[in-house]
Amino acid sequence: MRSITTLNLQYAHRFYGFKGEAQYLHGHTGILTIEVEDTVNPGVNMVFPCNEIYKTAWNVLKNFDHALILREDDPLLPAVMRVYEEQGIRLGSPQNQMKGPAFRTPLAIAYPECRVVVTKETMTVEGMIKIVYDLLKDKLNIARISFSSGVNSASQEYAVEKTKERCPLCGIALDERGICPKCGYHKNTRD
Ligand SMILES: [Zn+2]
Ligand SMILES: [Zn+2]
Picture (tube, rainbow, N blue to C red):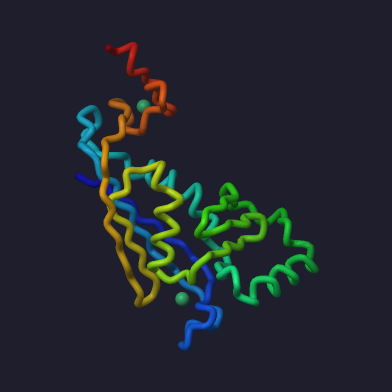
């Protein structure tokens, strides 16, 4: 069965080099849906608590919210960074607080201090799904990701190979020692 969480991301981007209106800088509210697949955990009668999927995803993905997302070869990128630099906000400002951890994957680099994400490929809905899967695949048993922004939507299915051990009391994934990081349940003391 699947537990499903949806989150919204508001961002600005453009399709650099694209022969269409999207070559101009513009903004969206994107809707991201993450489906997590596993057995139903009998202790809590759920696959995975949706608010925990949300928290895990949002911790990383908030770097895309209220952010500027540009491809690495887009000349707007150095231009924007230069203006931020001259303005003294390139390395942060007291008003910029909704920052996730900086990340660097082969597909995207986050600069949370100035709300910029640099992507390897054009950030289409398809491109975003690849980036999100790459960021979250080790944390969640993702079976499907969908992303829609304006009239554009895409989705991708993934094979889920094995079940994750989850806490029978609160439902979240146990750590490698079999301990629940949330409620302290210890698998081995209950055997
Ligand atoms: Zn767009
Ligand atoms: Zn627990």
